[in-house]
Image 1 (cartoon, rainbow, N blue to C red):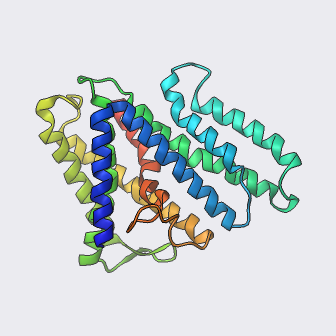
Image 2 (image 1 turned 180 degrees about the vertical axis):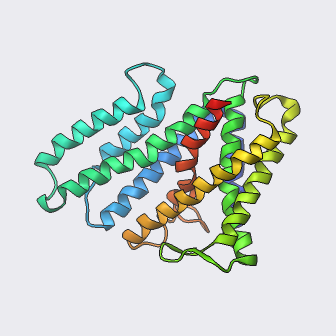
Image 3 (image 1 turned 120 degrees about the vertical axis):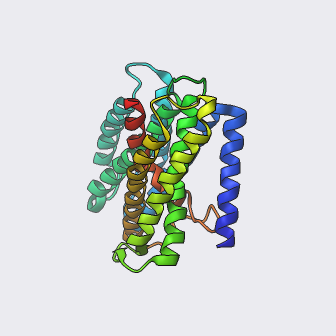
Length: 274
């Protein structure tokens, strides 16, 4: 637990420092870095399953997908890059890889691109949102990250204090319904608190009131819990406890970014409606 707390505090200091000094560009740099390392760990777990994804080219394409919203060019979009990747890997799979796992290698390569960089590029798109303040997109991105990640903290503490009923004993034995409820309530309270205390700075749209922030924070955090369970499914299939050992007390980069994978597109949809 001390290592986890230290790593959590250090990571938040890195996030705030990067975004303070480099603002939206810093947020985009962090997103691409975290997304690339997450995809790398996913491909490493796939290799433990006995498949051989096209990981090197996949990492380059993944970075391009996450950077594509910056281009603002009609032909340079995440969808077109994914389409090109599918064509390239389909051609390569014909002459490469073992016949026994060609289909699985192709499927896992494309799944990795869709599940990690394609989903996280929505966080880049959030950073690029224009609003009443010059850094509205940055504020919304920080709000989303806080709501997503502090759900884990609330779930952990609530589960330790009140947890009795297992949520998914086969997938993640330590998760409980009581912990999940505590996590959702933590995210709702934190989401409302951030908007309330930042109201005078006009970082957030006027329609994004503390009450609305609390209402939307809970389901967004719920998608973060689902995302965490999906990672647990993949780790069990790869017969591994942690996706890596990059962060003491937490695990790998995938263990850090897992909740943002599903909350980023949901958050972008919510913010677009605002």
